[in-house]
Each structure stands twice: as C-alpha cells, then as structure tokens.
Image 1 (cartoon, rainbow, N blue to C red):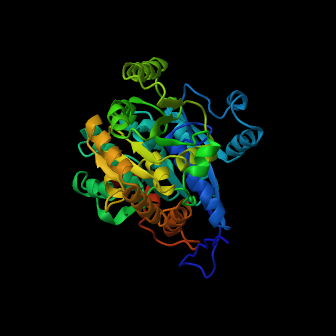
Image 2: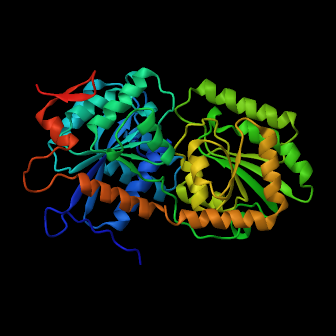
Image 3: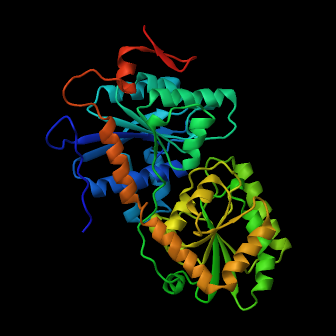
Length: 447
C-alpha cells in the first residue's frame, strides 16, 4: 500500500491543508511542460490527503486548448475513457493566462491573491511566456502576494544580457527556485551570480514501472522477433532523428542476425509552423528512401496515451535520445526511458550527462551517426553488458519516481507557506506585499 505524505508545519501542532496553484501549460495542450505538470500533480493527489491543487493554464493566444471545440476535436482520436480524462483536466483549471496579453497575467495574479491558495508553483520555460525573453511572467510574479516556488526547466550557460536579467528577476521574486540538474545549480551560481540558499535540486520524476523482459510487450505491439531501437517525443529538428537513421546501415551490417526496427514514436511538435513540420518529415522520409531503410524505420505518428507510451518503452531494447541542445537540463523522454529501465544511447546534453553517469548509459557526440552506430553496436553485441546497464539505470530510477519527487515538492511548498499566525517575514512574497520591486536593478526598494 502506498504511503501517504503528511505535511507538517512548525508554527502549529497539527498538519493543515495545503492549497497549491500551478502556473503552467497543461493537458490537453501537448508540450513537455504540460506533461511534467500533469505527472507531478497526479502523483501529489495520490500521496497526500491534505493537499488540493489547481492550475492557472498558460494558453497560446493562437490556440484555445481548453475550449469545448478543442475537446470535441480530440474526441476523434481519444477513447471515451481518455476524453473523460481530458474533461477532468479542464475541471482543475483555476484560471487562464493568455501568453501574449500582459493584462491576462495581472488578472491571473489578482484572482490568486483573492483566493485561499497557499503557494504558487511556476513552471518556467522561456518559450512558454511572451515578452522579451519571456518577461511577461515577471509582472505576474510582482503582483502575486502568495509564496512562489519557481521550477526552471532551462538554464543557459551563455545567456544574452536580457535573458540573464530575466532569470535574476525570477530568482529575486521567488521564495525558492527548483532545478532538476546539478549543472543548472552551478550555472545559476557561477554564471548568473545567484545565492545558493534559495536554490533547490529536485530531479525530473520518472514513472513507476515494473522491470520486465521485452518479449511480452513486443508481442502486444506486433513486434515479436524484432530488435527494437526507438526515439520518443514530440518530433522536431532538435531531436536529431536523422542522425540515428544515418547510423542504421552500419548497425544493420554489423548485426546480420538481428531483424532491426527503428521506431520514431510521437507526433510533430504542435508549436512548430506547419511548413517546418512538413519540411522536417520530408527530410526524414528522403533519408529513409535514400538509405533503403523503409522496412526498418517505422513512424508511429499519432496521439499516444501515457499507458500506450509506456507500452512502447517496455518493448524497446535500446532507446536513442539524440537531442541536439547541449544545455538541456530536463528531458521528459530521457526520464521515461530511465523509469522503464532501458539501455540508453544519448547525446551529451546536460540532463543525460548527469543522469547516465556511473555506467547508467552510453553517451555519444552531437551530430555524429558514426558514434551512435558504434555505441548501439556495442550494446547489441553483448547482451550481458546491455542488461547490466538496464538494471543499473532502473535501480537509479527508484529514488526519483514521481511519488518521491512529488513528496519533495510538497516539502518545499510546506517550507515556504506563510504561517497561520501573523509575524514579521522576510520571504519574497512578504517583501512583494510591503515594498515596490525595481525592474532594472532586480532588487526591492521602498515605494
């Protein structure tokens, strides 16, 4: 039976309810941040009885993800059970921020201020908010009178001055800042000059999945007898799929006794312009045709529920995570592969370099099909070695399953929550209530 998480508070003798609002994209919108927030909130619900949560959903102005029309459109793809789930997503929406409308950020902050919400958790990715380097979110933060925990999903090592200033402002306006990788913590300290005391390391969560042999999962997907290599996620040029395709001829030649299938699992990224999506897909199709790989490469280009996605991971022998951005500190696809105990070949981006250290996976150079082929061949040639890596990464995953990560977030929220009894506070939320915030200096000053 799963252990329930009980929140304590130093200011009172018994636990009290905690109400958390998540500022984030959210299903049915399709993006990595929406998936992250869904997984986090779902597990918070499962581990804590005295916590309620809601979402201030960030919508793209050009899309109305939470409209009835959006839900009707999904019905064509979703089963009845999944459509009910989408409606349940909508029921958790407390407010909406239209990403291009500054007034919408102010209105959302005012609604939170007038509520019984205890803590706000902002999921931050630069592409999620509008303004110079996503600066519109700052006005929301200046206006909110509740404690703020900000989760930073991207920390760049060489930021333009404007981006650096936005990050410093976010830090100043937050009571705590959560980062999923040590590399991000070090960058915030050394490159951005931020004090370590408000920074908290909380790894990206991974699913709780049994460690199983691939035989039965392959049978269920019609892949019996195949050696399955797969890449996952919303497809876009940053995934580096073409590098895996270019590596395949060498892999096939070196492993003549294996019937190799390379699965590219996921829809085109909805944030991409339609022309960009089609251009990239045409590039991949042309490459498959040129290299005569039509019987080896399979595009699973449709909506997959979380259960279907996990089923595909469990049928995978080697997961190829060939992202092209070296500074990525958080990858949902990598986290799912880790949780499923997969043998992983990944480029040396920040999250992979940290999570796959100590023999938990194999790293490859960026944009190098030869290196990808070499590492895949190494895993295919030695079953014992491949299984040992899978076991090692699965053991590592047990410390960062979503229920454990949810508990760590709940502890953090509990720490920053304002006490019941009025008292002098030096928290960022209290300072926002008493003083004015100087945008240019990233500091507080009296009105």
